[in-house]
Image (cartoon, rainbow, N blue to C red; front, side, top):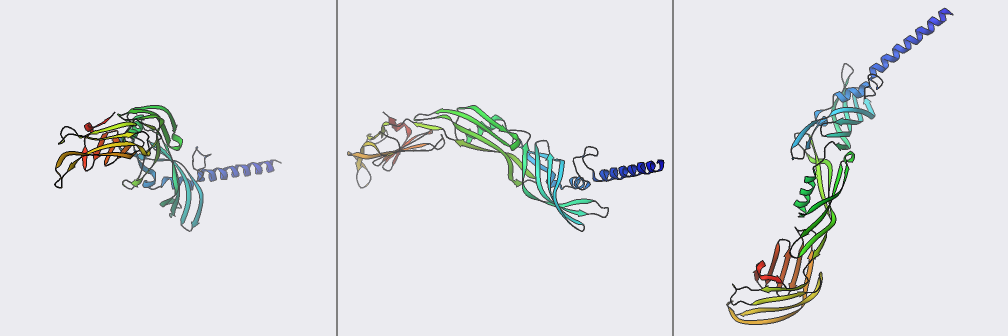
Length: 329
């Protein structure tokens, strides 16, 4: 009985030693807390090319900041081996100062005489998952709206921040007033998405926050009434050019225009007499959604008035008149 017990104990000891050596050689997660399930994965992680483990991020000052990514985990999803060549589809989790990245790549590997595998080249299977560790300041959102929408009176009313998916949205209310128009409401927002710039910088990827505006602000026009175009005292002779009455917006038959234009001879010299016209087809058409592109165009007989946030212009015949010569009664 003692002999059998000794043999049994010896077998258990041998099995334990062999098992320990196998685990130790594979560098499994149960050995020393490693994140690699095999020695192969650890070897590949240690030989990844620099262009995969380094990138640039654009900070809030517009500067490129170099990020060296530490490999946190490498998992082989599938692989094929042909003698000393191996192709492995991998999921790689990496982290730098400004972002976390999960890359989905194919690694081409070579086996060396000492039995180790090293990565020789790589290609991307699909876009990486990006988790930024920083976010733009609120001033970046307001600047983007002011620059591309033209709104100046902005008040932030809500926000949605999802750094895990690289998405941020700020919502604003607007109240901008001009001489003949007003922009008001809670329909403007600015979204930021963390993504690749689509260009390489010194063979490294560049990531940044891309901003996009959405504008559903209501435009209220104050253009109904009679618009008076005066030739001004600098005209020879001075005269009233036109009165255009607008009764409706976005109408092809908005009102009636009375129009006076001095006759001229064949040389183009004014004779001091006037032709009078009544216009039954004045039109008033509005377009645009912000102070940069909003426009109201009023057309009468040989006359027009164009109203923008920047001012008012008018023309009669072949003459253009300054803002000071147009008034709304």
